[in-house]
Image 1 (cartoon, one colour):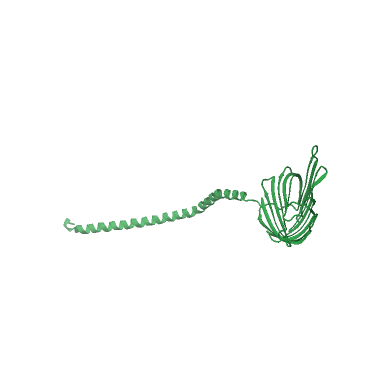
Image 2 (cartoon, helix red, strand yellow):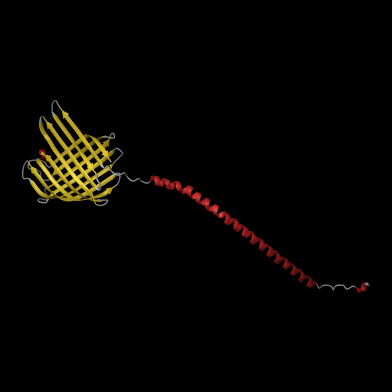
Length: 306
């Protein structure tokens, strides 16, 4: 075969060569992008799966951290919350005694004795109180009085109760041979806390008073009262009791009694009690003063029984 018989490819045109090169470049670029896209898709799926797998442990760690931070504070707050006060004893009572005597240039003797008892059956409070005071100077009785009080309270609600009371007083140095009064009404607890309690009441009743001078008094009455107690410390208690009584027959014939006492506990049984009592009668028997005061320091023995 002669050399002339070989067919040689016709020479390519320069523009056609450039177009062919650009087409190959475009195909390679597209293929590279497709591979990159597939790789990113697979990588993202793997990342999502890894994150999905790791979320539960992360949440658990967050819960544990929150409990470790906030649980101790909540427990401390619960521990610091005030505890409910224990119920009062079913029965409790006190007995007190005080004596003062002098001899020599003056001969005096003063005796004070008293006691109280409180009984709490279901929804009831029954109180009894008695106090006797006698004072002599040079064999002459200068003061002698006897006081007895009874009161029954029936709880209606947490703060409201109905009450009935009876009082007796003999105080000859004040011109009263005997005094009896009966009252009934409603009491309301203004403050009812563990350390502080305040109760007020109002009622209607009847009074019978026999006097050593002047006319006796027999009349219907209205009364108002207040009793405030505060626990100053674990061993110290303060009591303030106020009573007001007025007759219907004469509005100017009214009486006021006020007792303030401070009791300091010395042991489980014995306490020291300091009290001041004022009795005021706006219309006393003729020839007698309106005001009588009694100050006493007494040794008190108490008991409580559930």
